[in-house]
Each structure stands twice: as structure tokens, then as C-alpha cells.
Length: 79
Image (cartoon, rainbow, N blue to C red; front, top):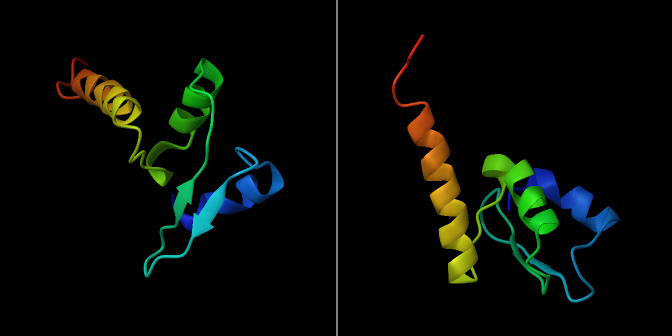
């Protein structure tokens, strides 16, 4: 996740076991045990390019499929 998002998560953690690790970039590694729900997926999508889902693989693939489908809508300018 990008550092710009972390303040929200310190105010409202994703879970009791949430851990944030520093990297040598503007990005942080975050791990947390969360329930895969529509609310969680909605929150992930609302963060846009500030969060990259690395695991679990099925969630990463689902987000990738949604982003690809959205991108395909904007490939051809129909106006």
C-alpha cells in the first residue's frame, strides 16, 4: 500500500493482527486477516492505485479481472 493510505488504517485497523512493514520505497507491506466480503472488496476498490493486493491469489485475480474489464471500457472512445 502507498504510504498515503496508512493514516486511515491506524485510525481504523483492518484486523487485530494487522502488521505494517517498512520498505525502501513509498510503499508499505501490510498483512492482516480479514473476512472476504463485499464491504472489504468495496474498500479495496475505493483505494484505487494506492493498494496492490498480493495475496490471496484468488482475491488478486478477482481485482485484476475487475480492473481489466474497467480498462476495456475506456479503450475505444465512443464519443
